[in-house]
Length: 335
Ligand code: P6P
Image (cartoon, rainbow, N blue to C red; front, side, top):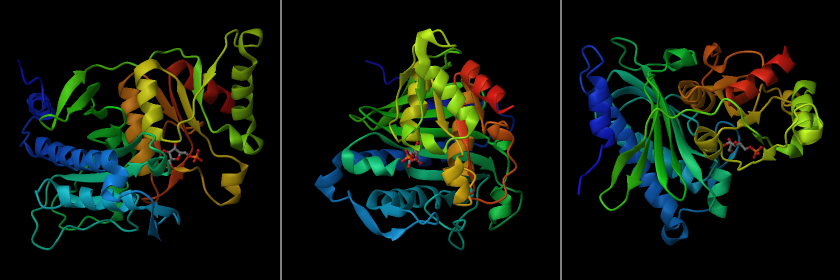
């Protein structure tokens, strides 16, 4: 019996192509994988270890945090801050950039993460996930500040997520296609299970929260109405709908069988003074890189997500991503 290709084997082989690769990238991915394995363990145990339910705190978004949101964030900090692979960490769960302890070795990378996305699903035992984005750290900066993190998505070195579902699957792109690694709990390794993942160009499956329909802008209303008209309508085919309320699960479904995911801006979001619900730096950008690397597309409706110039670390954007032909149709309706 073989071991198979571990995440570490994979990234070391990938690094052979990186001039002057020092192995810190492999080390960084290993740190992220360790955090994800521990989060997977706690998500899997749930009530057995008392991690479900709400924490008595709010995050910077003013949203009630779940205990596992806070625990997952603490685990990401613990896994990342002592090994000399990063120079700073940004997280949905922290108002400010996390600076490394005084004296801790600084590394070549910055990590931005949503430690546990979809946490409203934890207490109902529906899939949730960790999302991460990796940037190059600025040369010779001991304590990178928010401005050092505010790079467009095109500058991401790598992006990925870990889906805590029936299987625990880590999905990664380093800019050369998308690969998937399934956790073998028997010996605690992520093993390569899929490579060169491609999203089907066409799809007949859309994901949007229909309960906001009365707030939608006309391009979104037009697109969804046409899908709902089915084969007797303009599209000439029936569509299926999904809404898991966990972006990681939606993106994984799209990588696996195609589809379009939409969290557009709408009148209600605009009235609250926001540009969207999902966050650019640690949700939209990493997912957009993954989707584009798998042949799909990711837009705000009027702009390629990866080209949005960030203004602040927790800013929100509209997100429409998935099968290229469908995303381009929605963009055309916004045109
Ligand atoms: P709604 C989870 O809270 C999240 O950020 C995404 O993972 C998910 O797609 C979306 O929000 C769900 O939002 O408004 O349907 O609860």
